Every structure is written in structure tokens, then in C-alpha cells.
Length: 145
Image 1: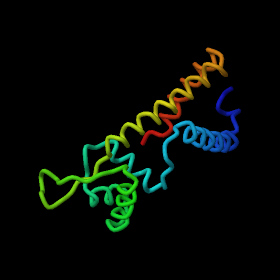
Image 2: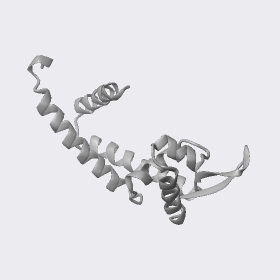
Image 3: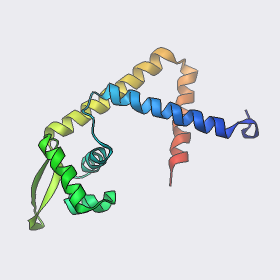
Image 4: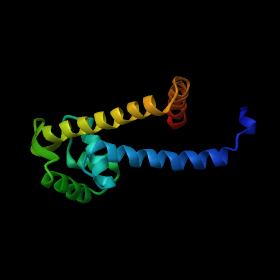
């Protein structure tokens, strides 16, 4: 259908609702412990590094260092993160994901991907699977900076 005939407001509203449902379903399928939004942001950042200071985490997430210290302490108490001396500055400490947390994150990602693969195989025709593939590319372009 030509873009002039598409009701973009209705499409946007439906996409918002559907994407929220997908996120909730993937959380369930992941089987990984639930975090607050702030904790989730820290875990995501740490998954991308080999260690980072609390001050740098706070700067990246635009929160006060005291707030980030509290978040890191909660994650430490849960066994998700640990601290080690910064090799560049012996007075400073770096925060990193524990091996157990990294393994759990990998399992959760595999569970989510596995659910999506199975759902697409079972519920969609090959043509619909192609449409989903094209839609992902379009969503990536929509979300690009």
C-alpha cells in the first residue's frame, strides 16, 4: 500500500503496543532476574566493557555518583557485579560483571532468541518470515541516529 494511504498515527500506536508486548514476552522467556531500569542500564553497560569506574558509569547514565554507587552496591549484593583495583590507578576500583552474571545473560539471550526462532517457524509462513526480516531492517533504520 502506498505511504499516502497508510494511517501513520494508527500504525505508530499499534507498533508501540506490539513492541511493548514483545518486550514483556522476551523478558519472560529470558528467565533472567528482573532488574530496575537503573540496574538494567548498568548491567548493559558492563556487558560492553571489561570494567569501568562508578564515576564513569554515573556519567554515562547521567546520574549522580552517589546514586550509581547505590545501584552498584545492590548489584554487588546480588552477585551480579564485583569490583577490582584499576590497573591504571591503584586507588580506584573498577566494576565488572561476574562470570556467573555473564553466563546468565548469555543464557537469557539464547532463550529469547530461541523463543523468537521457534515462534516464527511455527506461526509464520516463509513469506511472512521474510516480511519480518525486512521489517527489522526498517526498524533499525527508523531508530538510527
